[in-house]
Image 1 (cartoon, rainbow, N blue to C red):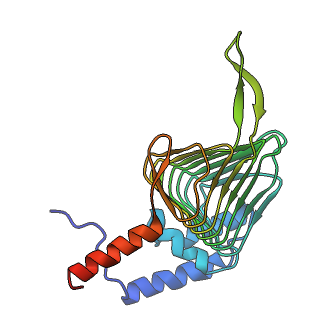
Image 2 (cartoon, rainbow, N blue to C red):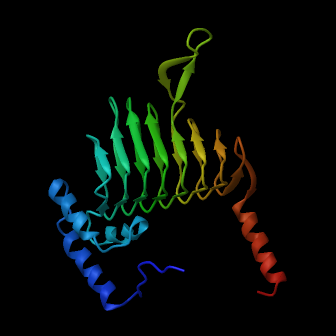
Image 3 (cartoon, rainbow, N blue to C red):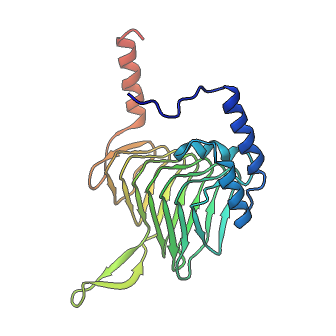
Length: 247
């Protein structure tokens, strides 16, 4: 058995590492020098999500040196975490992207917009690795304290189908975009398509494809996603089971 990098939390060593990171994060401003300071700050910090607490150290948050931010109309709130290899890319005629306070964008997430597409992410929302946001034509509005698991995709636009020829027209259309209200939980590998509103506090099971509106507090699964119960009923059932078990 091998033990790699074992250390105790709360030791003088870990406290020193935290002070080191705190000092260098003061200089983590936009630009090459800021990225250099970030690289120095994380020298002794655990990789992957181990860097997430650094976003709390300054209002500027944390942007990983390997992240790519290529956008002319990007607004980032305070204490935002942007992890390794996250890409925010503006294609032709992209609309605005607004990221609220304390948002976490984890590794390899890609945000791309163009042709007037607008994205808004509310405060406290967490987006796990390898999610894809292709925001063209329509608007994608994600509320506050939304939890999005890894590998999800969001597409607030459609391609036109042609009766003849190549099959798919180049022109993009939208049916109103996507709205995800506050407190929604979205499971692993969910796809959300154009023209959808997901109500406050809804839960979407892993692998679902959302093609129509889901009401507030719904629990939905499947392809296409359908409501199987409401969270209020789940909570009542859970309370009843606890009472029966004497808990």
